[in-house]
Length: 140
Image 1 (tube, rainbow, N blue to C red):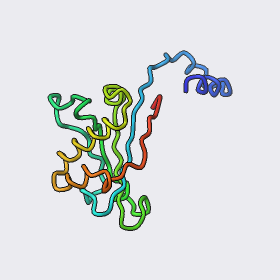
Image 2: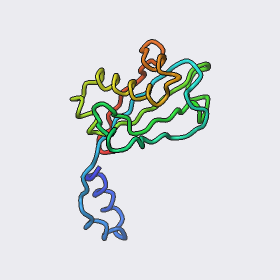
Image 3: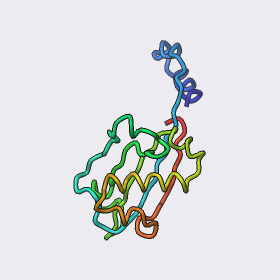
Image 4: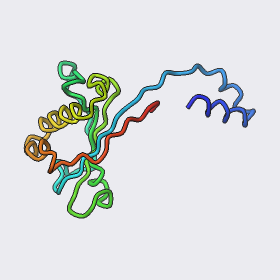
């Protein structure tokens, strides 16, 4: 954060010129984790970015910014027989749901079901794709 950075700079005189840098606005992001029984919709350890185009960038109905499956990167990121999905959300998507995690979760599941139609039934079922955590990261 800004105050911590300023204190840090005071300890290093050679960084004095950095004090004049402008204070930049910070953004917040959200993250939802889901756990589910294998297999994952992807086999490759990649980050999927939302590239659906401006007509589908309505963040209330299409809140997903990106998605990855950490358990595909390394099996130890989930218990044996399970996978882990991580969905990143921009602050405006969270704001459009007024911080209501239930409606945001439903919108995320709907969008993921469109991205992975072969897994849509599992993704929509809260007993199969279990929400493990919802995190808001201020000043990301």
